[in-house]
Image 1 (cartoon, rainbow, N blue to C red):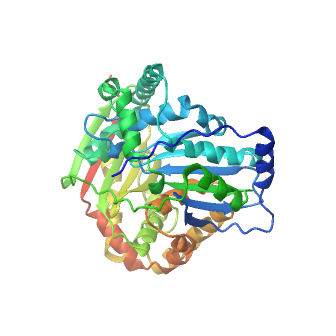
Image 2: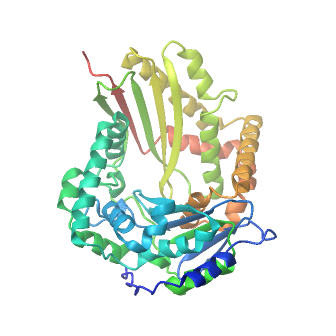
Image 3: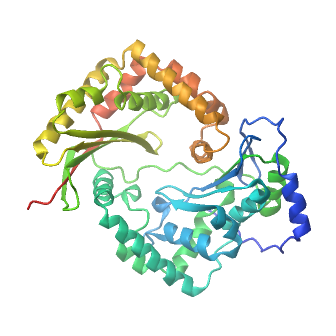
Length: 441
């Protein structure tokens, strides 16, 4: 993979020129709010919307912890700190937003007033110019990251999450903590961040979303001025390599005196077909599991375990094409024995097995699909707030036509589709059941 070119720093524009450009960037009320994507040295998605009070700017760089070379764990997070807090050109981003690192990407996010939006767009794109920070910046950010790690490890949920991730994806980059272990952070040098930037920070592989009261022509002109119009090159999809070993169930236990009640996290790593229908069916199945609809586990579990049950939460995420993690958190009341959580987990597994046979009943599925379609329309109607989701969507290789068709695809899901997803989750590639229990007195 080629290195990102180091762009020369440009002279500051005059205040008069900046004021003129700021006035030109405000969108006309007649412009549509449909997102439009194009290639301009970057995948640029613009969603003009005159109703919004701020302009949302989201840059997704496909450079995360899973991309770090051996011996440089934590380099992606260190680089994000150095760029955001020590590169003067990023000051407008710091003033209006923040940055985040995950296993597969780094996101720079800002919500700026319209008069500052073009400057924020330009500042965000400056992340591709290179790393030019003073040596003392490394030690300052190393100390900050070590404190951040201590905070995570002090949190029972943070420690449990790390245990689950490592057990679910042993030996894979996606199983690592994105900020790095303390020993990894101590071993990082400035050269690691510089090399990671040169290898992974490519504008042609990134997605920039700009949404709100903004004129598309002003955004396009500034993007072209900052990074040119290089032809985009497709980036290979990340696979789970090495593939995690199959296992029916891995049990973990963490005793922590800070926990007032036992909890269990059931994490299921499963293969789900990478098709629009399967993608929609996974979302609808998750909605159903977490709902109060007839037959859904939540009311069943609440009725079966009223005396011990406190909460149940569901979440799902895509790790790589075809790989989905379903996470279920079962929380009990103080004093509940672990055996009671075994019963709750068994009830949930039994329900998934039933759904694997017949899927969600057609009339119930129709209700779930209608509710999902309403939520999607409401989300799309918001002036801003969908930039991160849109950036992830485009980065996953899904086009805008499928973004617009999400509600229609959800309506087309059948009980057989949900059955296929439930079957994948009921007989998973790997399952981790982790207990977070109060330390014995």
